[in-house]
Length: 414
Image (cartoon, rainbow, N blue to C red; front, side):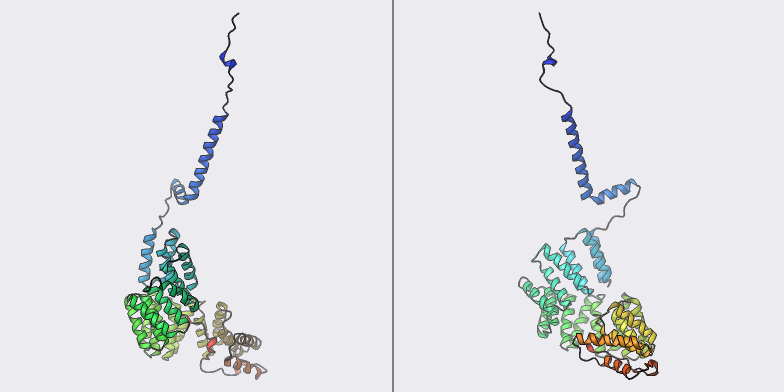
């Protein structure tokens, strides 16, 4: 008998769709991972696509090179804050560009922001530990903080690699000046100018060293040359105007402040300095208005608030003086000068308890700081002790504007 066999029935293979299913699952997972990676690495393109689907096109970001060009133009125009802002925008797109970082850090020092400049120098040195630009910026920032002892070895070590680097020599000159090493500061400043006669910062540093040793006329010459190179670079104007005032070239100083204010109308520092200039030549009312303008332009600017308070105090306008001294202390709670003057102001307002509290606090602060010349504080406490009824306004205050001890004078705006 013939038995017919079905081939399919004797097959030892089993058919299954499972391998095909897993292949599709793997492909799907790979697609998901790839999409996630693209979203993570290309967020700008994703957001742009979404906006385009919604019918909105994003505003294109300026290229970093364009932003830096705009920053340089702003710097040449005297707009230091704008130049800093533009460099910050460029660095968002190019955070590791050392050229951008160095220029940005130098502007921060020019703007009296040395702490931030030192952080920028660390970013440069993290990218390239031997980059002299990072070392020059770090030394300059430390010198600006009057930490010359730290800045000097940094600059000297870097100069061993690049002996004619004007930026390093400028930083070294400032560092020596911070340590009262006058001759060394002069030598380094002169070498900086010789290394690069067109470097505005080098001439500025050399002028500071000359002024420190009493060579005022030579310092003026260096500053005038610096400003001829960069007519809208505002920081050296203040030193030049100060030297003009010291030589009784008062109108020239006032003209320089006018120049600053024509570029930056709400420059509180220039307004205050112009107030001082007019006060020096006896135009008290004009000086008062300018000090008020300085305080209004920047309420946190301690020297302006202090000087405004002094001028109001000398006119017996104690309520207004009180407000200025209180704003001064709000901005700088440890300011001994404002504390003392507020105590005296309270006395003449007849607010005896507040006057005593302020003056005693000022005395404690002065003792803690080792300040021995506290004549103004002692004068106030003597008035209180000799006035058991604390008549205040019944006693005339000094007719001249009182000056506090050197240690207690308001911090320099330089």
